[in-house]
Amino acid sequence: MRVCIIGDGISSLTLAKALINENIYVDIFTTKKNNLLNKSRTIGISKSNIEYFNSNILNIDKITWKIKNIEIFSENLKNEKILNFRSNDNQLFSILRNYQLYEMLKKDLSKNKFFKKKYLNFNSSLIKNYEIVIITDYSHIFTKKFFSKKIIKKYKGLAYTTIVKHKKIPNITATQIFTKNGPLAFLPISQNETSIVYSFGDNQNVQKENVENLIKNYNFKYKINKFPSVNSFELQSISLRSYYQGKFLAFGDLLHRIHPLAGQGFNMTIRDIKILLDIIKKKNSLGLSLDSSVNKEFEKMLKHKNLIFSNGIDVIHEFFNFERKTKNTFLSKTIQYLGKNQNINNIFTKVADKGITL
Ligand SMILES: Cc1cc2nc3c(=O)[nH]c(=O)nc-3n(C[C@H](O)[C@H](O)[C@H](O)COP(=O)(O)OP(=O)(O)OC[C@H]3O[C@@H](n4cnc5c(N)ncnc54)[C@H](O)[C@@H]3O)c2cc1C
Image (cartoon, rainbow, N blue to C red; front, side, top):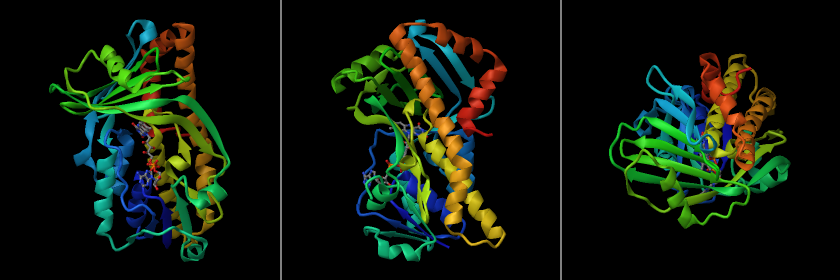
């Protein structure tokens, strides 16, 4: 089988590596020679996804930092802790830097005989060479042709990211504070470095220079030595109405993009990869042909789950947004109360780890 992937981001390379592990030929098409990923971006990957990644895609343990606790606070409740997740064994989440993941995958793929990267614009004359054509690139002409129908929500704001250097501490606890401006996450990446994601919505007019001071106001844990400049990313959530069109399948953030407050965007893509591979392996074992029926089955198995999950993240966002605007504390107090119940706490942890498992 030969698969083509249009685009050269972390979703493309991760999927390419997962496919070649199944002895499937993969050609990546990109017109950009160098994908220089932003160095202030990090990703939190859930425990079950890291385990899947390490054993089925590539062992990335050496670029990950393990998180054993997650604490969630609300400014509305005078910075009281509303939820606390702990792991009795070794990790809840692992944090890594996007560009390191990209470089590691790129290096590994370059040595593989099943893989080729072509610096070409994919066009109609090439379609016949592939059983499936997977698109991750938002600006490709086929994206505009096949995947223009989508549900979009613009949060009218930006997520600011940076990685601060600070005094050494064990740094195994991630913290999220629902501040009056929006969610602020401190995500440890080593004993002396922590990645920060601060999301502002609702047209809040925040100057980049003020973000540093706002973060410092909420930082009660780190003795920061160096505060590099912050980068910003537009906040929006997108779900495509159709996952596929014949041979063409949309993938990665092109298929679904969500608010970063729960750190789940790439986690959804890892879950998608697992399902896609399961479909391919099942068809292979039954001697069935690998064609657009793979895409049809993929959409059937995932679209509803991904939509429920994306909407769930949006509900969390709206929920805290409402509280912020009304200065009501009832909702945070309810979560705080529910989170103290171990069974409910376990359900929250399971959904964050494995997504919707209906
Ligand atoms: C602030 C923030 C924090 C996040 N935190 C988490 C988290 O903790 N956990 C999690 O699971 N997810 C998180 N996400 C989501 C995660 O970052 C995305 O799901 C993931 O990066 C998407 O990768 P992608 O390859 O699908 O898309 P993209 O990286 O957007 O790339 C899509 C396509 O665009 C093209 N492209 C993009 N940039 C370039 C370039 N510079 N040069 C050439 N081509 C380019 C490529 O063709 C590529 O295939 C976060 C997102 C944001 C914005």
